[in-house]
Image (cartoon, rainbow, N blue to C red; front, side, top):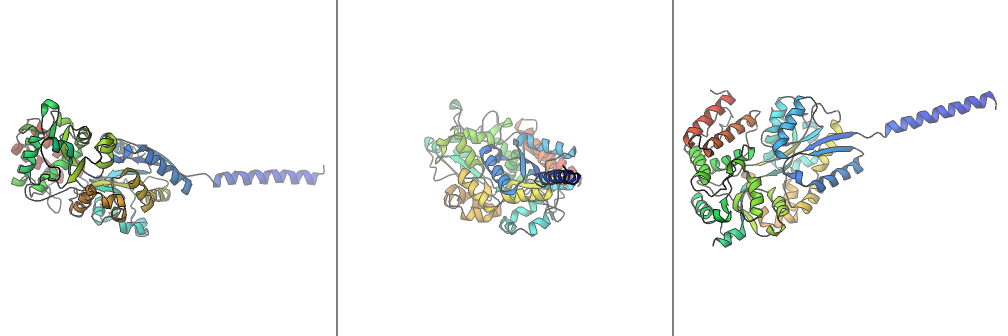
Length: 424
């Protein structure tokens, strides 16, 4: 073989190897890490399908984790403080986004949202929950409001008409007492008493129902140390301490426990919301058609508290564009219509899905939830919220555990919140 041909063959081999190597690099796939929290972690097969479909359509790999609510926040904080957060995480609409943004942990997505038509379909009253100092740091994924969920069978067994649920506190108390039979392990109402954000939301419901407010309009001071605040705290805790319509282990229970107990015909009434629909039916398929929702009973005015979860992108993420593609994908109308068809809840952050889905628009339970939503109160969108919520939980537990009376605990709670806000 001539020298020329040897050189040509060598050049061909080198060129082929280079092209092959370059080709391998060019098709390397990005990989996102995603942490999912909230009530939707129980729909494991749903997330597996969504992620698989996204990977197939985008060419982006996704490594995701489903993390239970009670440990999720602490795990997130640890990851952010260590400088090793996931590219995307779910953040509770109850103040998490402004807290994370205040630490510089999140990427603002204002520019992305401005160029995405889907942003027009997000419920308007959700944007303050994902904003900090005038910038948006999250995309609401699902939302909710709180109402009274009740068990039709237990109502009928107690001689009550499930088509005529209680509207005012005095009716509610009377029904709860009729529905309580400790000898059978049955209770009229579940009071959330554990150290949990859910307990804070419970007190907030009663506070607003009594005509009170939590903080001043500028979020600078506590405003719940009033007659309305005392009426709310006294009645909320008396349901367990005085009237005994809530189970003995109330100090360790939240509405999540009561939902399961309602599915077993052991608790007749509890605070619930759109997330409850798929979960109570998963706990006991026979409960379907035997429970419903109504506006939570009130003292002076009907009230609800808004909640839900948003997706956020970490400031330290090296895959911000890919991360936006993922959160945009899971918030699309098509994905949400599929999810609702599969699970019947929770409540989409998209107005069009809420109004166009036959499942949501024709179900009496959903009518209550959607009708309440536009006027539901938000939790204060301030960086101090998690500390304030913890204080409210402690205030409630001091009463439930008989360490303080309601009036004393209320003064203690106001003083501590004012310290957090720097107004004392």
